[in-house]
Structure formats: C-alpha cells, structure tokens
Length: 340
Image (cartoon, rainbow, N blue to C red; front, side, top):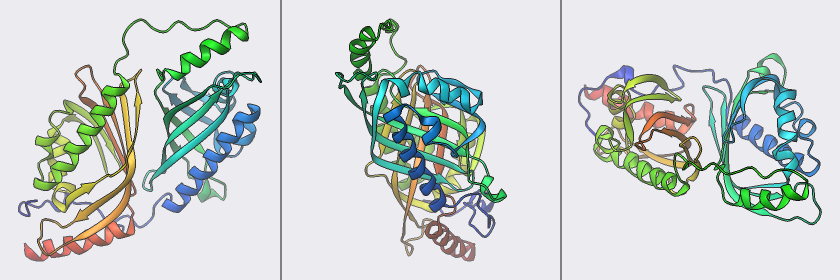
C-alpha cells in the first residue's frame, strides 16, 4: 500500500472518537443466541409468538426472500409465520452459525447452514431439507431505558428456489387438501450456482485489492458503475469511484491482507441478493515494512446484483469498535503521522 497522500479524514476512526457504542459485541452475540434458540423452539408447536416473546418490538418492519415484506404490528408478521413456515416445518436446526455485530448501528447479522424438516404437521411425513439462512436484525436502544433490546427490522435471506422445497410441498399439500403452487416459468434472476460463483470471485478480488491497494481495479468486474453502499463506517450512492476512492485512502491504505477462510454464502435467487459472512483476519500495516498487526474480526457483506451480475447495492457490516483492531490502527496511524 502507498503511504503518500494520506487523508486523515478518510482513515478509520478509533474508539477515541466514538467512545459510546449502542451495543457491545457480547450483547449482540448473546441476543443472537437467544433469538435462534427461541425461533427454533417455535416450530415444535407452531407458537413463535410465544417462544420469541420479548425479543421483537410491538411494531416493526420485515423483508424476507419469499416475498413477505411489510411493516406493522408484531401480531401481523407472526400471523403470517404461523400460516406458512411455522405450519409446514416442525424442526429447524441451525449449523455452523456465524454472528456479526455492527456495534455502531445495533445490527446483529446471523448466518448459518440449516436443516429443516417439512411435515405440514403430518405424522407420516419426514422431509429434511438442507440450506442456509441469514437473519439481519436491527435492534432498538431499549436497554438504555431499562428494557431488553427488541427487533425493529427483520430481514431474512435464503434460496427460495431450493429444490427441496417444491419436492416436500408437492408431497404434503395434496394430503392437506391444498393446491400445490405452480413454479414460475420465467428463469430466476440468478441461479444458486451463479451466486456462489460470484461470491467466490468477488471476495477473492476484494482480498487481492489489499496487496497493491487497487480495489478500483480488482473490483471492476463485480461492482456496477453506479452503486449504493451502506457500510458500518460510511454510506452513499453514486459512481463506484466515490466509495472505492476514499477506501484507498482508508482501509486500502491501512490493511495489506484480508483472509476470510470459510465464509457462509447465501443466495437469494429470486432477488439476486448474495450474502457472505464469516470470521476474518486482517493485517494492519499502513504500508510500513516494520508493522505486522494481525487482527481477528467478523464481517458480513450483502451484494444486490443487476442483470449483468454486477452489484448495484453493496452492504458491509463489522464490529467497528473491535479493541484489537482499534489498537492496531492507532499504533500505525501514529507512525504514519510522525512520518509526514
């Protein structure tokens, strides 16, 4: 990475400039664990309103991959749940769960592999289906008012065209006297395989960009010319140069390696949305040969693609208050400042 033309305003801000975080990582992880246990428990008796009591705000918004989208009272979305997935599924087992906590914005991003058993409540049915799911949970600040935090927005991402779903529904619905939905004839906007391939290629290109601090070049095949970005430390909309230019003067400058060994990838094939999440190690050097500061953090990215399979919306979440990360940044920034 180049050390000249440093713009201090673009460098990552440490907790010295942001001493109060709305939620800690520990609080976010604990909330995720509680939510997933309560959510899984609700499938046994189709009573999610009871098992998740106290975790959701009385009014919230929701946006799921199956087209369930809206805002209103909690009873509304729980009613939808009880007549759809709550009714059809009796077992929900999350595996390899990853939790990313955006401590600045109180967002808890849960990504996991998943096994569902789809039975429709019929004792003679047993249809396990494997897949993956993401819940992006936006929390309020209720804890500051002496109350538990509650979910005010519930985003759910999964592959709604998982072939296991129509196979199971095709067996069960006729037994229940219900009509089997006709699959859409038009091809899905993106296939599962294409989404997985995009995730692998885009993340490899993103990692490669740290070597020479040239993300504008390495990400060119994957990011549209005009893009909206919503990251933990910045947001905006415009030419991709408007986000990747400042990035070269901040994270691109400070980090020389980005290693994400085993991310969980979820492809929403109906909406061309790809999520990538997992444990990350970065090396913070500021381009200085004498620096070597490996930092472990968690990260999640959400790409929304156009028909050319380029991202027109790019979200990134991480813990911007990670103590080890901020200690490394402060150490390196002090050396860069002294060298000016």
